[in-house]
Length: 365
Ligand code: NAD
Image 1 (cartoon, rainbow, N blue to C red):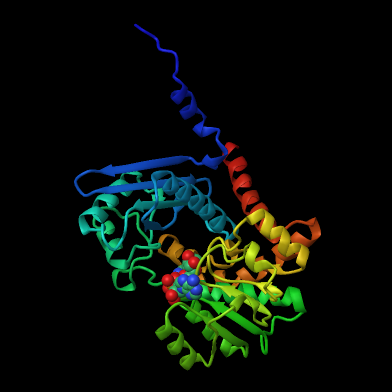
Image 2: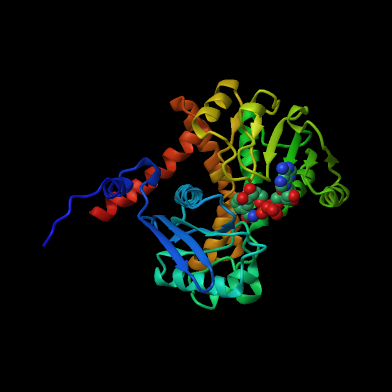
């Protein structure tokens, strides 16, 4: 038998598990089906607290490496989101490579369901960017490991209103911490992105007497929301506006080198994932400027809490109660950050990691 020396490329491959970029994942599954054109990657970051739950995103990634990076980052984020919310869930996420408007077919989604099924419940999927309810119905034909299905099919329905409620709770707690009262009456709030979550957030804010400014790329949406909730439309130089609270509810990375110096808000609390372009550096810049940043993965967890009710069999009222608890957790994180002189993002990560570590130790016995 000829024993070959490991080639250079094999040696590199072995280092994948030690590589920082692998982010300590338990499992990374590449799904390839020539017939339907499915190219997907499922990332299972952790199942320590429970099955890894997280949505499937379909995106036209520039290359496969970008897709791998995205799924690794997103699935790790789900571990932290579930942990900090006190849910018995691990963290996972899936990405399908391709343009959802051009390449997606029912057959492709069913094939994806087969791949999910092979993981025997280790990974549970849901909707994310580029995936809709119909797609999830296709997935459901091949596996039971799906959540976020319509109420008509026995699911928990659209999670967005619950997400918005959690963001509102996190915002109130941040106000309490910053100004000594959680009364948002008279506070100037900019809501960027008035989609599924943003609209309900605007509703809560206007009902509590806040002065709400709204921004969106869709003019018809802006007009409708402004008329329904008596909000002011803002279109230009939004980061320079006079405001108390900035609520990013559209895209990630809007808190960055360009915007931090311009933002006059004393509180940042919104629904968008990954709001800080650089978690460490921008988190520190906000801390130095005395801006209260409510960690995104903590305050936007309402949707996950709602979806979890499909597995844990609790009801909407209980999901709302748990979501309301985001208020207390936010206050705790903001206080912890001050006590330890660390950023609020770091304080939130610490709490999330501690719960996973405690369970890991308990499992070891
Ligand atoms: P959505 O697509 O319904 O709404 C997003 C809105 O942002 C749209 O109205 C869109 O026109 C607008 N928008 C896009 N680009 C913009 C820009 N450059 N400037 C201003 N507006 C812009 O999405 P959603 O479900 O409301 O989610 C909003 C954010 O919250 C996303 O980042 C999402 O990942 C995050 N999030 C959502 C949930 C949920 O339950 N839906 C849960 C957790 C996190």
